[in-house]
Amino acid sequence: SSEGPVFYRQERVGRGGKPFWIYKFRTMYTDAEAAGPQLSHEGDKRVTPLGAKLRKYRLDELPQFYNVLRGDMSIVGPRPERAYYIKQILERAPYYYLLHQLRPGITSWGMVRYGYASTVDEMVERLYYDWLYYEHMSIKLDLAVLLCTVGTIIKGKGK
Image 1 (cartoon, rainbow, N blue to C red):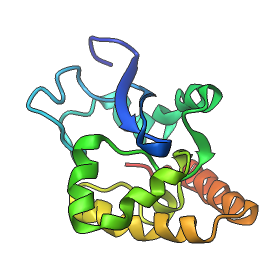
Image 2: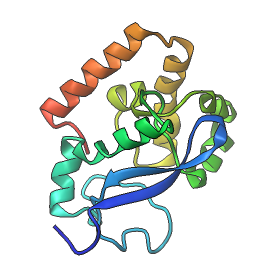
Image 3: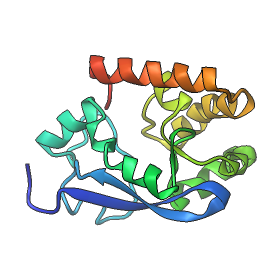
Image 4: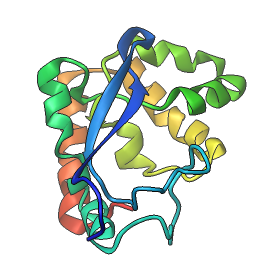
């Protein structure tokens, strides 16, 4: 619903601390981060009208299946972050780096139990759920995450 490309790519940090390009449908205006990295928040004016709908139903994440096919991501696992925010998270939660032993996921226990984070402090709070996932990884837990994700999509509880 605005000028610019349909797809958006952003560098994230994945398994082993290796950077990779994550792909999404673009939901923000093209100059959204002209002032540097920013986290999205409720009522974010950088989000396009169509982008808001895509985010609500998490449809903006669909291109990440390409990342899964490439081997950069899995369907379930801790969400990958940008290096800019990882540095800040590590100052508050030094154990965060352990999550880099896992392949990041399109969906995560943190996303379905906590949701989107608008601040670094909220990212650290959400980390609690990703840490639980790390400690209790199983097919049963992956299925629970997928089931919760489907519920989030159907109910339109994305941000």
